[in-house]
Image 1: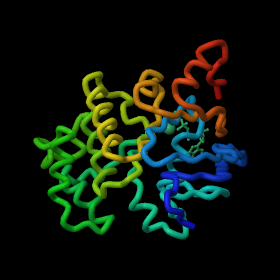
Image 2: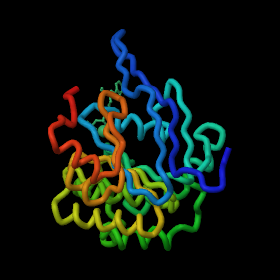
Image 3: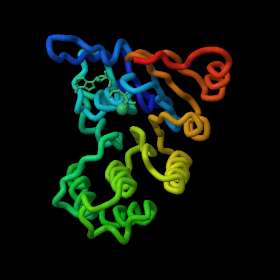
Image 4: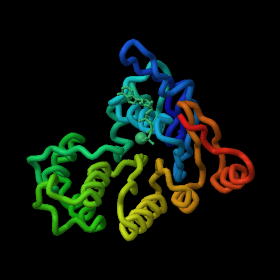
Length: 242
Ligand SMILES: Nc1ncnc2c1ncn2[C@@H]1O[C@H](COP(=O)(O)OP(=O)(O)OP(=O)(O)O)[C@@H](O)[C@H]1O
Ligand SMILES: [Mg+2]
């Protein structure tokens, strides 16, 4: 049930196992945490820790075994329409319809949210992400960094209050990384809650107010970024290898 000031994201008792070749792989085990509105939150952890699985659950591309999830008081099952309007997800994997241009991709995504008259906002997004001169190009002909920027524009077409970015700066050049940092900081200043996964500690240190460490599908720590980095830089090993 929605309260007057609900958490941007609230997760309770979330678990997910994958079954492959008769074997069970626990990707997430009893995850619970919440993120306040306006936060800039980092999700860290080694390869295979469960970060993308958790984000897949928010996108409903992964079906959890159990758990409750709400965004701004909207339950993922009971209030799915509102839930999906409240969140924009930038996935780790780059996938597009190869036959569409950049502009058509963003118009199609707007249509998915029932937004017919969204061209002004799309133009603004293209401008701020430095893609205006690419709008008629086929998405598949763009460079990797440009594709990543289209993914970000795609996640923002419906101006979601919560934005989740799964390694948005992986494999992008240093200049673009700095531009994306400024872009995310600006979105956060404008009131968007941001969740970011990254393997770069300097990125988490610069951007995130709080950080959760996932390891083997469990929350190993959840702290203010400065407290956590201080604690873990002393003598403890941050991650056990999977
Ligand atoms: N569709 C799937 N089928 C089977 N196993 C899966 C599937 N998706 C993820 N897994 C497994 O779940 C675990 C968590 O994977 P996940 O992609 O969530 O990790 P991650 O923290 O995002 O890692 P990375 O930093 O490499 O992106 C891994 O062991 C992975 O092999
Ligand atoms: Mg991942």
